[in-house]
Length: 190
Image 1: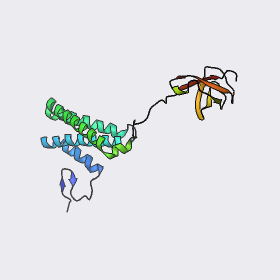
Image 2 (image 1 turned 90 degrees about the horizontal axis):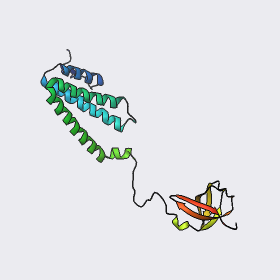
Image 3 (image 1 turned 120 degrees about the vertical axis):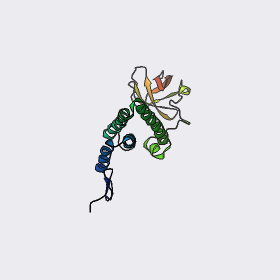
Image 4 (image 1 turned 45 degrees about the vertical axis):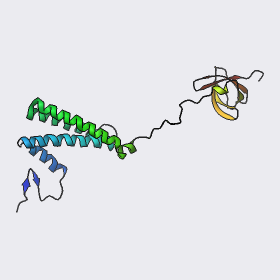
């Protein structure tokens, strides 16, 4: 007894593989209007599935992304061939709505949040305020030529000079602040 075949798929097959899926798409290309609509829908949906696989599972832009975009474009082209400009327009609008829904769903899912880094700005400033150090004195821990490390009020701080070289263990004074740079000079009489 031969297996029953409907639409290119064997009903006695325990599972469906990629080969049977591809043969089903090819078979659907040859059917009537309903099957053409189903083919277009399958192409677009499979294209979106491949794009989701590309975004979530595979770093970079590679074969699944290219195939996904290709399947979506081919689905729109099939709609243009089968139903004219209006069919292609409806397919593109449905693709756009599907993409928006997919993006909104992805932004709310835990899977996408686990892919990226957490970002929180509360209580953080990008530059510390060192203006209170102007005029304070300290000691150069390393040679300052012109950058190095100094101790000012018991804190180790990265400092720079205005181009002069200062030996280690020399007394210094904070001359000014430029953004995050602490500019020091040799203490007079040191």
